[in-house]
Length: 143
Image 1 (cartoon, helix red, strand yellow):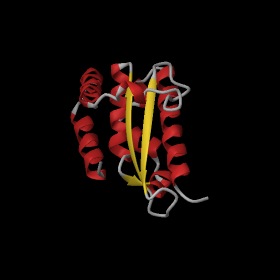
Image 2 (cartoon, one colour):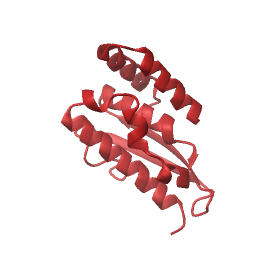
Image 3 (cartoon, one colour):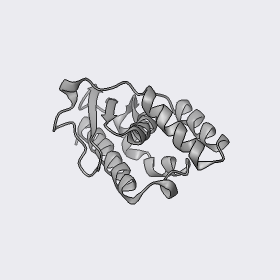
Image 4 (cartoon, helix red, strand yellow):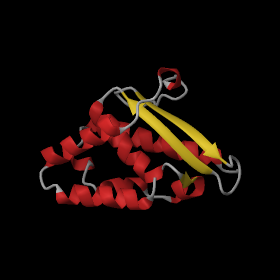
């Protein structure tokens, strides 16, 4: 995914004045997210700290190198969470691991105005997903 995809997403969110419309848009993003095959929904792929079931699977090109690129696939058993994952993947998947580590993911998500509308449990889950994404990026680069 490219930064321009996230910029388009941010523009779409800015266009939607009503939170209910944004909520529906997040659900639509979740519906468009390809499901993970059952065999990839493992305990190792599961994100801890989320009330919903969330799985993130990472593939790395050039693992251990400075140019390591992280590709992520993810899924959830909750539609709104699938939408949040879709947003996160638009922001990070296909980027160099170092870029992900340097990125202000929380700030980018903040531009969408989501945090003030998420329940505390969903906000905690979002934080857990972001922490997992950063951890996956950290594993992809040399120490």
